[in-house]
Length: 155
Image (cartoon, rainbow, N blue to C red; front, side, top):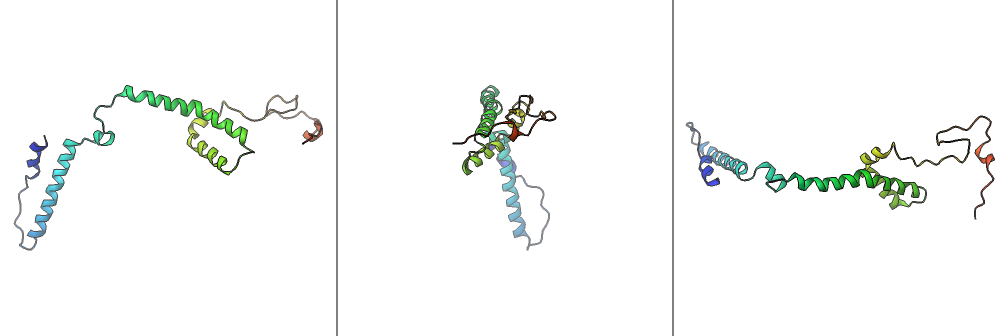
């Protein structure tokens, strides 16, 4: 196919009469234009755009969907709870590198973590039995936290 289209590149438009000084420069420009036309024809015929990007001629949708499904399952359903629980357990005990890794994973999995945010709540429940939820307020007249419980002995 390329050999059939190759002579078409060398077809030239009608040339106007030019002064002798600019003949040298215009012949070089014509050669460049001819080479560019040949390259464009060759690129259009021999290397279509999809083939240049993917490297494959026939893309099988059924071969692409299972890896995408596995990636989406891991990204949206497995990784966010693991990362959130890791952060909950190690928040006050972590070192610099662990902090860096936690925030890096938070950045990478941010859309999936936003998906989980309404359903996951790691806030501590209050120790006061009159308060049912973390957002509950103590009843009027309840003593302050430090007065309600005996001091904790630390060993």
